[in-house]
Amino acid sequence: MLLILCVDLDDDLGRKTGLQTPVIGRDEVERSAVALATVDPEDSDVNVLFQGVHLYDELVHREEQEVEVAAVTGVEGKDVAANRAVGREVDRVLAELETGEEVHAIVITDGAQDESVLPVIRSRMPIDGVRRVVVRQAQDLESMYYTIKQVLADPETRGTVLVPLGILLLIYPFVVIAGQFDVGGAVVLGLISALLGLYSLFRGLGLETTIDAVAERVRSGLYAGRVTLITYVVALALLVVAGVQGYETVGNVSTAIEDTPLAVAFAAFVHGAILWVAAAGLTSSLGQITDEYLSGRFRWRYLNAPFYVIAIAMVVYALSGFFLPDAPGVTTVTLSELAIALTAGTLLGVLSTLTFAVAESRTPSTAEPA
Image 1 (tube, rainbow, N blue to C red):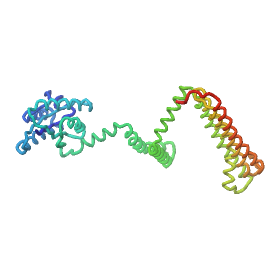
Image 2: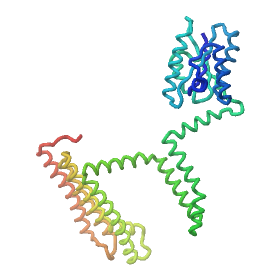
Image 3: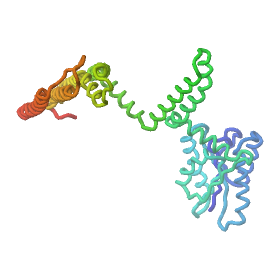
Image 4: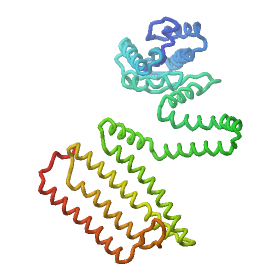
C-alpha cells in the first residue's frame, strides 16, 4: 500500500479547526483542508492538505497497489514533543489501515521545519518520496527562515556571526561620537579593525578553550587555597621588572658604545633582566613545591627546580657579562671568571640532582599522585 502522508508539525489543523487528528481518507482530508482554509486562508498547511488530495487523485488510477491519504499533526512550539506526537498519530494511521501489504509513504510538508520529523516516520515505514509544498511567490522563504532560526539558536554560530556583524554596525555611531570629541575617524576605524582582527585570531586559533581552562584553574586555585596562584602573580610582576631593567641596561650600554651591535644589545638586555627572571623562576617553583607538599604529592626531586634556576641564571649572567663593556648596571666578567661560573653552574645542577635522587631513594614514598 502507498500512503500519502500530509504532515502538520505545529498542529495548525487541530488548533484552528478543532478537528480530531489523524485524518484518514480522501474525503476527510479534503474536508479538513476546506475547514482550515475557511478559518485561515493564509496558512501554508492548507496547501499541504490539498496537495495530498491532488496526489491521491493522480496516483489512485495509475498505481497498481492500493493508495490512501492521511493527515497527521504534532504540537505547537516544541520540536521533540511535536515529533513524538506525529509518531503516535502515524502509529494510529497504520493500525487503522486494513491491509496485509507493506506500507510505503510519500510525505508532504510545507517546509524544512516539518521535514525534521522524517526520521520518526522512516522508523515506522519506508519513505518513497518527499514533496515540499510552498507558494510559488514565496518559494524557499520558509526554508530560509528556518535555516536562519536554527543558525541563530546555536550559541557557537551566534557568537561567530553576530559579534563581528555587531562590531561592523557600530562603526558609524562610533565615528559620529568620536567626531563630537574631536577624535579622528581614522582612529576609530583603526580600533574597530584591531578588534575584528583580534576576534578573528581568537576564534581561528581556538583560544576560547584555553581561556576557559585558565579561568577554571584560577577559580579552583582560589577555592583550594593554592600558593601557586600568589607566586605566579608575583613571578609575572618580576618578569615585568626584568623587562624594564633589561631595557635600561641596553640604554646604558648604548651610551658607552656608539652604534651598538645587535648581539651586544641582546647580551645587555639579558644581563640586566636575568636576575629578575631568576627571582621569578624561584618564586614560582617554590610555590609549586609548596602546593605539592600540601597535597601529599611531594617528591624530593621537585627541589631540583630552584637549584636549576640558580645554576642557569649564574651561567647566563656570567656569559652575557663577558661580552659587555664596563657600563652602569653591568658586571663585566673576565675569561677566568666565566670559566668559574660555568663550572659552578654545572656542579650545582649535578650535585643537586644526585643529592635529591639519593634522598628520594632512601625516603619511603608517599601516596602516588592522582
